[in-house]
Image: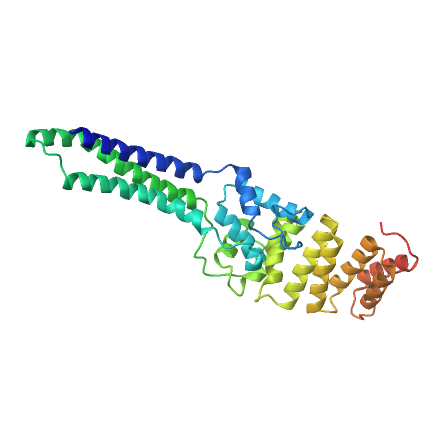
Length: 331
């Protein structure tokens, strides 16, 4: 084999292996880098144009913690982004999907494979001017190297595919039964929701799952599901109000964010101005968070004016109204 050909093959193998090394490193960033990267692309829902990675808001911190949990679970970046976008709608995506880096991850190993094959084809069309015996001997010596180059490129392509798609959610779930979910596991409901995010009936299942997480004290997990229902174009008014009230409760009771909670409750009351849960929670927030006694008293009185209010709830609201009128500090 000529010196020129030997050098060409060496360069080709080095190029393929170098590219493969870059791809494998690029597809396996550290967890903190992944969390920061994902968080920088998602808008904080209670901030002015800030990402959850840069916002000091407690809600943003909780959302970033959720991203960290998903990263620790082994979810891919795209799965985590899809979950957040499915929860917050497209309005919270600060920039378009970073297709450039994804294209590099896919096209680079393919280019490496094509390059290796190209070298082999070039060699076959431009063989060195040697005798037949020398050519046969050189081919036998070169064959393992050519096979190695092609196989290595193919392995990189396949590895890139699995690194991109590992752990994907179940898909193709055709039927959604939201009538009886008592015997349906959280995992199954998550899979159905992920595979049918745009289905008109999925909001009932999503709300039931969010309520289940809420009752279990898993507020960060419940949060994106409640918000998805609140933003859904298919959800009923009662579903939207329920989701908004829960979100407001988490913002206030969990994070002490008065303005965020009041904003969510105003959205709920814009949908149903007679919603007792929304009125009561707003009264609580105004009383406990702002010492707005008069406004709080007005809301409690509005609830008590409902003749259908259950006796137990009526007594609770009346007790709170008496405390507010007495200018008693909220406990």
